[in-house]
Amino acid sequence: MNDFDRAPHVLVSGAGIAGLALALQLVRAGIRATVVERADAPRAGGQAVDLRGASREVAERMRLMPGIDALRVHEQGMSYVDGQGRVFGRMSMADFDGEGAVAEIEIARGDLAQVLLDALHAAADTRPGLLDLRFGDRLTALAQDATGVDVEFEHARPARFDVVVGADGVHSATRRLAFGPEKRFATYLGGYAAFFTMPTPADLEEGWFALRFVPGATFGIRPDLDPSTSKAILTLRMDRDPSLRGDRAAQEALIRERIAGAGWHAPSVLAALSEASDLYFDELVRIDVPDVANGRVVLLGDAASCGSPMTGQGTATALIGAYLLAARLASSPGDTMGSLRRYSADIAPFAAQGKEIPGGGIKRMVPANRLEAAVSRALTGLMFSRATLPLVRRMFAGGTSLPLPEVAPLTVA
Image (cartoon, rainbow, N blue to C red; front, top):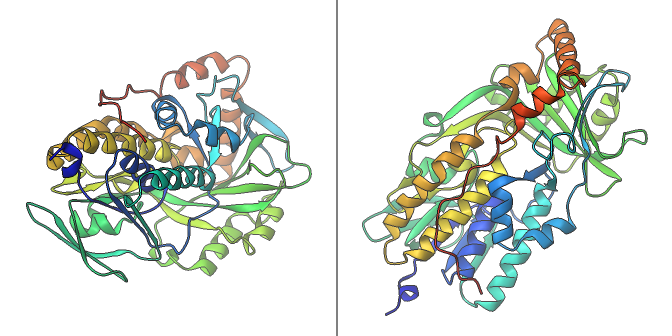
């Protein structure tokens, strides 16, 4: 019996960036993967995510760059505007060498998922029988012992797996089943995030992610791959309100209350809100799981570690984690438990870095009142002035790269 005859059968809960990337590498390595996603179909939309440093290196090693390059969002940088749309500060991508708030490589989350899904189907076509991809189902129970994990599903029949990977996001059901309740690992960060697709306003400055500060909220409009559409991005500063979860009407009412009368393109944002089919709205939380491997169950992506959308590092950490976990499982197919422990150690420094929020968190990003909004405007204008730009560049330089651990090269089909 050779090593790959002993390769584990891996269940991946979640078909987002983390789950699809992991499944792709597992199938390429000859490891059987079952992927279960509760949504009925792949999720389109989502705001732009960036690749830089180690995450870009991983994308290159996974041979994803041709697909990513074809779908890149070409942004020039971030601009800050007042109620009349006048720019009072800019963070140019070029001025920061792609290491500022906007990176050289930006791609919509849904487009990156499609790149991964296309690559996964191509890999599965060359390795028949290694991929079982199921939409519209979810885990409901699991029980592990020394040799495997018994899993129950909402729809499919129970089955046994060698490894279960929770790649099912911030509110991970897998984490709850195997590690404990969410409140043990989640820290509320003082607000909510929302984004959705909207028609691009006619006078929007092309290629710039524009932001406006108002009391209690920051809202912006970000370029899309399709120039006729853009992404509305909102961050709301407030106490936690559990009743908002799943209540779209209440979410819309809150957004309207916060930016009505805010000037600039607030009317356009609100006009598009009620028609948006891809509204994302969730609380800003940090997820801290000290050890992401618990026996034969392991966590990946936001289920394992999340600093909220304010960090801009969730996708990067997910992609790196998927690459490292697959490499560990492929290099030691006869030592599954050891592979998971090594992956847990591998991803820890990337997870810690990925939770660092630039600029002081929500209190810096979202003013609480008119006075703070005025101060935010003044400070932003000063930060990106010609006099202080060199200093700000040094603050951003070198903050996004950690070396990848030494792992055995993955033999891909």
